[in-house]
Length: 112
Image 1 (tube, rainbow, N blue to C red):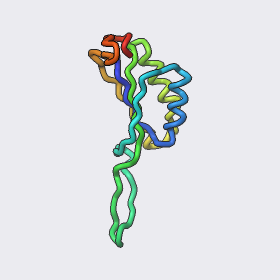
Image 2: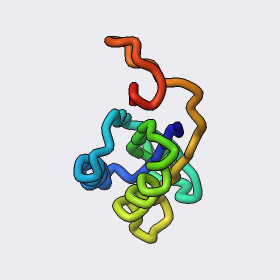
Image 3: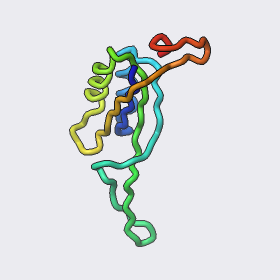
Image 4: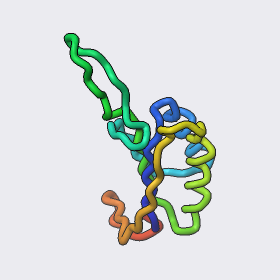
């Protein structure tokens, strides 16, 4: 099992939610986050002083999938979130040792 974390532009929230629904990907967690990478932010003026704003709003999607679904899930995210502009985001794929459904106690892939 793998945990896929994708940090994308806020404008891609609804398109990605719809894409995950169509692909029958379940167990999705979505968070509003702030960060910076190559995009670096922008300059604003506050009370006559220049201020560099480098923490940009982003959306973070997290989902745990079976090893067999990793490639198609990553491809789905790329196809939906890509704009070919700096700031499109990043995808992280991490190993998951165990998943346990609290309600039933089921463990492993069946608990995803």
